[in-house]
Length: 91
Image (tube, rainbow, N blue to C red; front, side, top):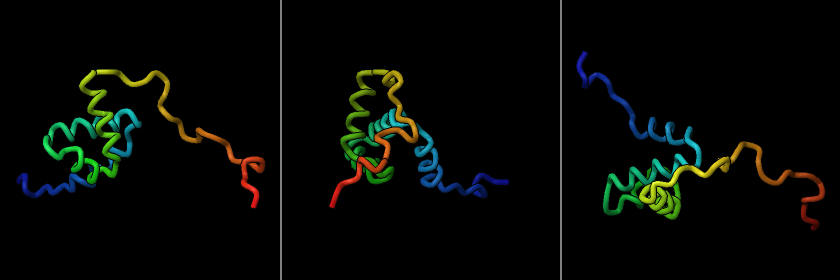
């Protein structure tokens, strides 16, 4: 088989890969892609991965400063304020 026989939809696989990452890893990945593209990279990656430009800029800043992930601050599923009767707004 030739290399041309294998056709991959890289955008689809990249989006799937991106969705599996934690928040910190998503920021780092998006920042790295933006830096790889260069000028207008932040805008291009923002549209491609559907992420805000400020998040990418924050990732670039963290990447350049070479800071590690925040300790035990990765959000967990089901976190946040719990919904109950006392939290509902009265109309």
